[in-house]
Structures are given as C-alpha cells and as structure tokens.
Image (cartoon, rainbow, N blue to C red):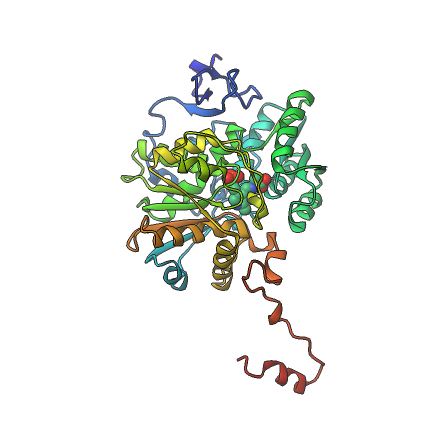
Length: 425
Ligand code: F0G
C-alpha cells in the first residue's frame, strides 16, 4: 500500500515527505523528525463518549488508558498489541498543595502509577506493539532510567531482546536494578545521556536494532493519552494549563500533539496552554524559548533530577511546535526549588521522583510571576514514582531538609520509645 492510500503514515515535520508506517524509520531523508499522521477528519468522527463508554470494561484493552483511545493512537491488529495494561492513572487534588502553589484549582495526574512507575509505559506499549507488527529482532533505547525500565518490562512480555544504553553512574540505582530485573542487557556508556543517545542511534542504524526512544513516532502516539486521559478525568472540560517536566522533549511534543488533535476534533472547546519546566542547570529548551526559539543551544547538563539531565534534546523541533501552538511557556526551576516542591508532594502523601516535581515548582513560580492566575485551572503531570529515586529522600540536598531525622534508634524498651517520642507528637 502506498502511504497516501493508507489511513496512517509517517510524515516529516519539516518537508512533509511521507513514508509507510511499516518502515522502521525515525528520521526523514532530509534529517528531520517524523510524526504519525492520519487521514484528515479521522478524529472528528469520534465522540469522546465513545472513549467514556469503555471505562470500567474488563478486557485488557479497555482497561488500558492508552488503547482505550486506540482510534487516535494506532490502527493495529489486536494480536500484535503488548499491553500490561497501562495508564488509568489517578487525578489528585490536595488543598494543602493548592495553597502552597497559590492556585485554587490544582490537579496532579500521577503517571508514576503506571505499571513500571513512570509515564514511559504509555509510549512503550505502542512502540513495542509496532515492533511486533513489523517483526524486529530486538529493541533498544538510551535512557536516564525510566525508558529503560519500561522498555525492559514490555520487551520481556513481548519476548523480544532488549538492549539499553545508560550513562555510566548517572542513573538512580532503583531504575538500574528495575531494568536488570526485567532481563535487559545494559550497556553502561562512558559519557552522559546525550552521548548515549547518539551512540544508540548509530547502533540501531548499523545493527538492525529497533529504536524505542521518543524519536520513534509511535512512542509519541502512546504518550498523547496522558493528555487525553486527563481531559477525560475532567469530563472533557479542559484546564487552562498543563505543567510538565521537560528533558528530551518527547513528552512536551506528545502533549502538544494530543491537545492539537483533541481541539481540532472538537473533543474540547478550549485549548490548554502547556508549561514545560526544565531544571535550570539542564535548560537548553528554556534558553531557546527565551530567545523566541531563534537558536538551538546545547548545554552540559547537571541536575539532581537525573531523569532530565539532558543537554541536547532530540524532540526539540516537535516540542517547539507544541509550545507555539498552545501559546505555551517554557520555564526553569533550580534544584532547590524542585526538591522543595517534591517534599510538598511527598508530604501530601502522593510522592514523586525529583524530575516530576518540576511541574509543581514551575506552576508555583509561574503563579508568582503572574503568568498563571490563582483562578486558573492547572494540571501538573507527575511523571515518575517516589520509589524511583530513594537517594533524593534521605539526606539534605541543596539546603532542603532530608528525612534522616525521622529515623531514631531505640532500645527494645518503652523508656527508650518514650524518650524518642518526647516533644515529637
Ligand atoms: N520525568 C521523568 C520521570 C522522566 O524519566 C523523563 C525522561 C522526563 C520527565 C522528561 O520527559 O524526556 O519526554 O522530556 N526520561 C527519559 C528516560 C529521558 O530515559 O527515562 P521527556
């Protein structure tokens, strides 16, 4: 079938060249990124209530918060779909966090509740299903730890060999252990994430591995459902803002595409604005935004939020389009600011990993500067689970208190217990 005749195809975001979806390809001949596109009007024929009617269903595909939206994700035969299932994450409100941020109607979409503990599962289920459909021998990615864990789990389920490229000594032990436990082969690359990313791209091209980083357009199709499920949680009454952490920029791209498609299909009557938040010492997207995207800076990234320690994000062009389309903003927060926000989220009983807390730290900062108003409805995406980075909890970091003083050694008698509790209850 020629691409023009099929319902879905890959299309260059710069020169609009088209390729069939069964080609294992991530870039156009001209070197730019590819996106999955579908026949004009395909989504406007769907009513959101069709998606709503699947809620509460018992089949794996109905339970999946990705495949529940399958008409807008990927046309694929059921036999190829590898689903945990994933998605179906909760949307939280906590008055204490609203007060802390100065935003009355503040929501948290907790993507750390996905099966492997991060939002990556939503993209990986789609990309690995596509890997089954085109029958690749093995899958690979570069990762700061969450993509690798997700890829490893889904590859295990699919019976595919998995190879992950991680920056040596730069990912949390919990993520590394999780990736190994699911059985992936782990290449510790001498260098940072950006070096590992360049290496995996070359390796995939030369060695027939199928690349599952977010340059893979099928990843983006899955991750769009973060926004769609959030809109569904809100009864398709769109919020004013969606704030999210930004690293390699796949997620910013995905949320932008999701909102554009939902708006153009008439599923929502108002377009939310994206607020992409970077760590101030890993901030190439923010630097570019500040110059109205006139240049594309690359930085040597360093931040406590290891998930987003990225200086040369691959999905830059798509993310830029997402910010421009949604009249979004890009902001930055210091390590101390994101750790303080994490502490608030943790102590609200919700919890998240450091990178995720950028969303709240950023929303609070944008509220303080007047970009976000206190009456705006704001949804923060929490991208990863608290257990992903235990080191960020115990010791004080950047002047933000840790939890060490909550641990008191006691003798096994009541006197010691009474002494330990004195003045603390
Ligand atoms: N939050 C968490 C917890 C992440 O793991 C990542 C990215 C991001 C935010 C940023 O998302 O890259 O789409 O802008 N983690 C990747 C990984 C790089 O390898 O796990 P992005």
